[in-house]
Length: 93
Image 1 (cartoon, rainbow, N blue to C red):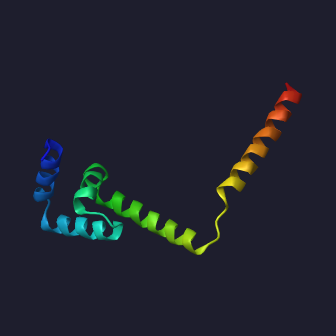
Image 2 (image 1 turned 60 degrees about the horizontal axis):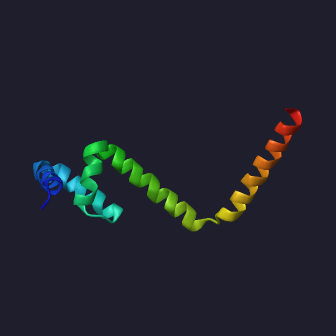
Image 3 (image 1 turned 120 degrees about the vertical axis):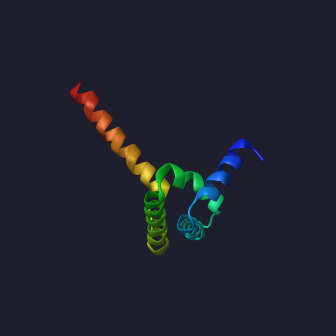
């Protein structure tokens, strides 16, 4: 076991029962293990991780139920916009 893994195991063992339960619930919702999420929880806190996961799941549900825009179409529009703006700048400059 590496030092980092040992440190994470120690951090996990030091969590209160309530925090361990909260971490496990977050892991189930994320489809990950508690050990995988622990570094993010330690860095950002439970509230931030829960909000981030909630927003991600909402966005995923939104895009699964609505028609999206093809990436190639978006890039073509952006390139056209940039070309138009660049031509204006050259004429004005």
